[in-house]
Each structure stands twice: as structure tokens, then as C-alpha cells.
Length: 243
Length: 371
Image (cartoon, rainbow over all chains, first blue to last red; front, side, top):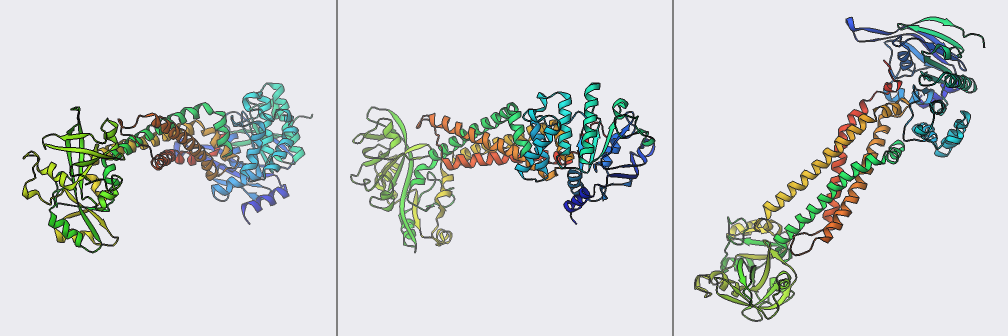
């Protein structure tokens, strides 16, 4: 089976994101830093899990490994049963495109592209037909409430709107898992709440396994589960407060 | 080129600046190419127009007319070779004065009246109609010398009568005057005696103009008959200053290509550093190295082609304003296109220095302060 067939099967299975016994170290000797220390975590389809922790706790490393950007020293990451740690960088890049959607800190949009083009780019990378890509991008922008601003560039959008475009872009390839990096870092409390609520709604609507890392506990509580991370370990697993 | 094209549109100011620099280099390249072509024309256009394939010179004279002398016997022997047609050709530079006493330089070319050389140049068989009759090239006519005028060769004591005007032709940056070979001999070898040809000079010429059939072993013929036979193109090097001028111009133009490569390389490297986050993001979204490179290099190629094209057009426009005659300048579309293509390729080559930088960018940088 090639990478495309594998990822198509994984999407169909919608088996969620499963990380088992992940270990990741940087440097060596006295300089060695343990970024991930035997981390195991499963995120089901349609579930939003928030990982909260201070800077340097290992949150970003967890996202890098979960997103097939970094190979762990040991352990495994599977999405819908597909091992994301195997194969060369090119294959992992293709699987990343097909199976994982990223929402980056500060939205990370291309300054030269309009909101619509930010989404179309994902379709182009995947080789999807132009017409289908455009209609899907417009539908997703409508879903996040930005259909009227499809022609605007990032500089013409507010912080919250930029983050909504980032979420819509992450959904373009119909991912099985959504990895979200500090989505509210540049937003006021109300906008932050709106964004995480939108993430939760989209997670359920598209039946995606969403893993969100944040240092903002007030928005983390909007997730289905909140896990605290400290020194590379998951030290507590809590259900969120009743809503 | 999805992102590359939109970057061009969005950040048009910086690309216009970069493109302007490339366009200026292209303008300079076109102008220098025109000067180079003009200098070449000025050096050898007369020789290039002659209906010959090879020239036979006296051995060890570096294909230089002023150093070479061939006798009549050698030229006759050359003409008797199978597949070879040979005629005497004399070429000497003179100071001349017109009827008003104005001095100017001429390259006096002597050729056999009625021969293939006389028929092939100067528009027909006008050479030799009268013993002192000559045909001047257009460059001399443009300075006010007309048909019927007399030209006196200083020191040689020989007077030439203008009987016709031929298209512009020069040798060693001096306008050609076509004369019967007998008159050329009288002017060249009779200088000491005031125009009287000494008996020893009978039948001499600077060289032999040859028309050689393809496949003839000219080296063997030359070796057997004691002559140094070269192609017409090889004989260009014997034109005064030709080799030094073409080498100098080529060196300047080559430096421009290197400068273009350095400019594009430097710009593209800085541009890549500035776009590092975007490139990381592209890769994080699943774009392969190949796709990212195609996008980035396509962007450079577009800038190079457009800027070089505009520069070549502007350069050609400026070149067309340069007055002919006084400045040795000639634009040939082939040379301009070749220079523009080399410039664009040099720029693309320069951009390759950033390729490794692009492929080395880790998608993980998209995760902000990622580990």
C-alpha cells in the first residue's frame, strides 16, 4: 500500500490519535534534556483534549512528535491505526498533509495570500482539483463565519479572524487529527473563549481527534479533557468542569 | 508557484527593486554587446565581406597582412592545386589626403581586376577600369569624398581617382579602398622611389585569397608550398588590435554575468532567510522539498526573465539612439538574445546558492518555540 492508500484507510477508520510510551531527549551528558518522558495519551474521534503546562514542560515537543515532525527516541504515534513515526521524511510529509491538520500559534498565515487562498493552498499541496478545492474552501470559511472576508489578507483581519482562518485551513484536508498550538496566545479572554468553542464544535462536527496545547487554563477548561504536563510527563488527567 | 506568484504580487516593491538592478545589468550587457559587435565589425567587416574561404600568408607572420609577403610563384602554385582557387591580395594601411588637403586613413586593398575578389566586393567589376581608379567604401564617402575626386597617398607619391563607392567596410578600424593589384603594388612597394615600382616587387602581394572546396587538406598544401593557410575567421585575429579588443569586451561582459549571478544569489539568500517561517509552514502543511523549491525557483526565474527582457529592450532602444559611424556600435538580435539568455541563466545559477538553505528548513519551526 502506498502512503495515499494508507491515509485514506486511516481517515475512513477515524480511529483517533494514539500515543504510547513516547520518549524524546535532546542533547547528551550533562546537557541532556528530557522533553518527553514515557508519555501515553489517546484522543478519540470527536474529542478535544487540552494539554496545559508552563513553558518548557514539553507541550510543543508532544505536538512535534504527534505531528510527525520529530521522530521519538521510542514509543509510537498512530492515527487511525497508521504509524506516523515510520518512513522517510517525504512519506511522513504526505501523511501529515492527509491525516493531520495544524492550527499554529498566532495563526501563522501567509501574508501574501487571502483567506480563501490560505485554504486553497492546502488543496493545491494535496493535488486536489481547483474547482473542488475552491468550493470546499468557501464552505469552510462559511463554517467559521468568514465567508464575507474570503478576499482579505491577514493584515486586513483581526487576531480572532486570523485564528478562524487557521482553523478552517486545518480542516481543508479533512484530517483525522487536529493539532493545535497555543491558539489563544494573542487574544483577549472573550475571543479566546470563542476560538476554543469553535475548535470544540468543529472537532465534534468533523469527528476529529483534537489535541490542543495551551498555557491558558481558563480556555483549557472548555475542552473535553484537560491534562497537565510538567517536565515532559503527563502528571494529571482531569475531566473538565461541568458545563 | 501558488505562493511564489502571490508573493510577487504582494511584495512587488522589493521585486521591482531587485528586477531593476537586473534590468540595469541587462541594459549594460546589451550596450557592451553592441559595442563589442561594433568593434568586431570595425576591425574585420571588410575582410568578412570578402568572397574567400581561406587566406594564405607568409609563414610565421601571425596572419598579419602588414608582416606577410607572398610572391607570384607561390600564388600561382596555390591556384594550381585541385579544389583551390587563389588570387593575390594586398592590404596596406596608408595616410591619405583629399583634394582639400584633409588627412584620413585608408586600408588599401589590392586585387586582380576581373578576379573573384574584385567581382565579389565593391559591387562588381569597377576595379581596374582605369589604372588609377579605386572604389572607396561608404565610410570615406560619408566624410565628403565623391566619385571623380582624387586621393593622394602621402609618402607613396601615388594618386588615386575615385570611380565608385562600395558599402561600408573596414579593416583595423580603417575604411577600405579597393584598387587594382598593380596600383596597390606601386603604392606599397614604390614608397621609397616615389611611386615607381622596383622590378623586385613585380607579382608580390600581402597574401593569397583562396576559395577552397570542402574536404581539401589546406594544411598539407600550405606545408608543401611554404605558406601559412588559415580560414577567414582565423585571419580575423591578424587585424590590428582585434584579439585584445574582443578579449577585453568579452571579459567585461563575463564580469557582468558573474555580477548578475552574485546579485541574484545574494537577494535570494536574504529573501529565503526572511521567508524561513513561511517555508517551514509550507512544509508543515505537507509540501515536499521539491514543491517548495519549484515554487521558489519559479519565482526567481520569472523575475529574471521579465527583468532581463525589459533590460534588453531598453538597452536595444538606447543602442538605436547611438549615432552610427563615429561610435563602433552594432546591435544584432542574435547577440542580444544570447546575452539576455546567458544573463537569465547566470541569475538562476546564482539563486541555486539558496537551495540548500531551503531544503534544510525544518517544518518544526512552524511550531513557534518548538523543541
